[in-house]
Length: 296
Image 1 (cartoon, rainbow, N blue to C red):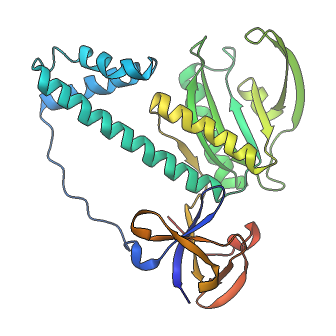
Image 2: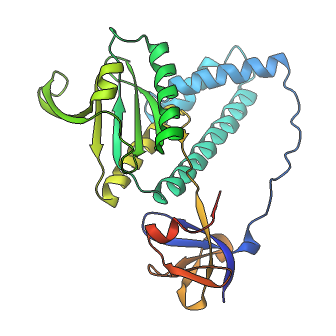
């Protein structure tokens, strides 16, 4: 047997195994961070604000914009350039890590809808909408078994807050009814069709439950969320149990080739056998994965 209790992830095309000996067990102890001085805290706050505003600009203009915004905070040009470069790289690495985490969690799940929620001024303010929707989704996770990965976004023209996300709704877990509605889009200049949920329509306003029926639709939805992570730096909102890996023993014949840095991982056959402590559970499938131990 090649590996025992390897961590298995799916990248949308292939199953990838990380052998047990190539990942640490338990939580890593973090070194205590040095408290920031008032000056350092102020510089970081200014950087975060300027960095977020710079994302609206073409990529080539972003660093120059941030540097200009921080000239008074760091007068020395070389120190300013070094500070902006280091922190821009930090933001870039963090965004990459969030994308990788998003992909692993999303591709290991089944999804039902790509949903959009907005609010009517007659029903909510922006603040009450944000708080109430988060609370509603939390209850649906706990009581109905929903899962979701989403992000808050503001409309480009109206700056109006809305929420986008991938949603899994189990059988018999839906609330309200999905009804097809048609109206005229002033933005696109044409009629548009939406699949609105009556529960959310009554409590919040316009929504759209777009059915997801293929892996390509999942990939397209992920692309949208990833694009928004890069654009805004906003954190994703997760709901429900969304493991990034499952554990399985792996046979020699199911290993196609080594993969990754220093060949520490392996690409597996599309129909590899899933096993727990030497017991065969079945060939990999959504039904079999549901029976396997999950890890993050």
